[in-house]
Length: 219
Ligand code: SAH
Image 1 (tube, helix red, strand yellow):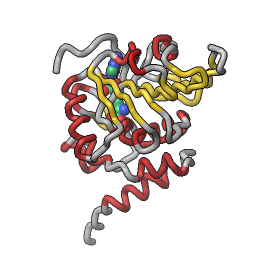
Image 2: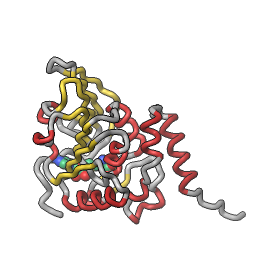
Image 3: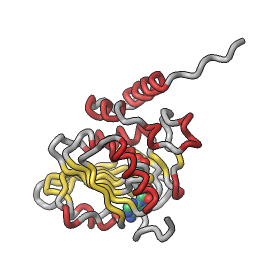
């Protein structure tokens, strides 16, 4: 029997979007942002075949490009609005950054590996994104010069409550971050109550690479 032809990228993308919907990513704007972000551009050559799979994949520097479902879930939980200035910690491949850039006014993104930052910047340029501002540095410190932010998304696991980042949020802003020291963390949402406090919700369990102190000494 002849081997079935491989599905086209369009078919794979359609299947991915259906999969995200069935897992609870229902926001039309978020789904559209994911649908119009070419994940293959962010995926290393070695894993091109798997670019449209709903799984995290390895990228350079021992890091990962996030699973599309988790990108959808986190972006939806963040509740980004078109006029928002968003801070993202952990640029990685730039995939999540690109999704955020389609939904907000400006995205400030920080990465501690120069190599990853450079590769992500090249992709933003290739995609013609004009609302992404990058910084090589320790994202755990946030970006005080540009604070306060409407939304903050952390895509590496913080050991505990990220106080420095919370202090850079607007009074009614939202921060979403994986929190925990082990291999499995709790995805938490902090919503400012307008009086200096936060409502904290645990959304689901996730597996992220750790948020590390300082910038990487290696490339
Ligand atoms: N959102 C990314 C996934 C990133 S993986 C994507 O869609 O591809 C987490 C990233 O956080 C890694 O690139 C890691 O180097 C970065 N990171 C970890 N600690 C950091 C820190 N303190 N400051 C900035 N980036 C950090």
